[in-house]
Image 1 (cartoon, rainbow, N blue to C red):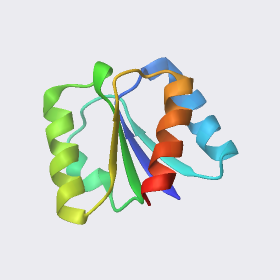
Image 2 (tube, one colour):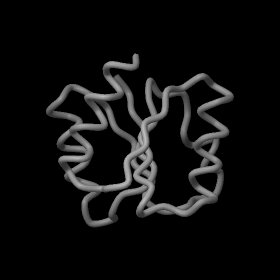
Image 3 (cartoon, one colour):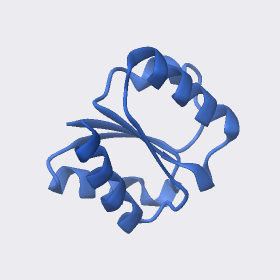
Length: 95
């Protein structure tokens, strides 16, 4: 399953990818706003948003893109590894 993560901490980028790889998922992480974010999201199986570490503008872009492409969205306020595990489990049950 391919997952896009919006938010999180810059320094934990590698840990997020490692956790997803061990779970058998492919992860794309956006911790900072980039030009053309809506195009960079692509067409993943699911979208995770860590709301505590992301701007409202990024959340709105991600929500709009997810709605347009019918991508399930899971939000979590925390941006820890444990929160990532729980969010992945939630996402797996919604797909």
